[in-house]
Length: 135
Image (tube, rainbow, N blue to C red):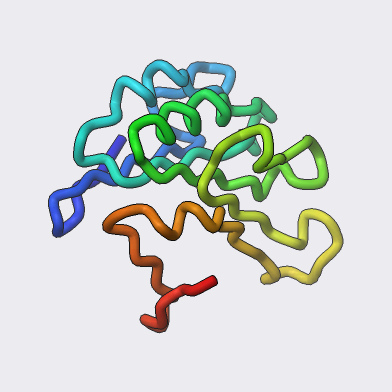
């Protein structure tokens, strides 16, 4: 469920085929929260399961991450345009959305990053080319 980076920090990633998802394709918020450690720096969870359509408990997970100072990301590629995706109701730090799901050309996507998330200690976002991200 996680991987340790070279710096010894843990990256917790949940995907649609993760063993912690029940038969309905929904992860348990309690299982995710219970897996958080002092070394966890990021949790990423699909907003909805594209195979069975279940919505994940994003708000619960994001609130727990916020309380522990852990960045939280949700992949809303399957959700946007079908169900409500709001950064006002779920305190996620980042949301990924792909445009072809609602009429944009394939390959168009965006990553929403909450401005306050950029100020977290030890977090220095960089683009794949190595350039720093600034607001």
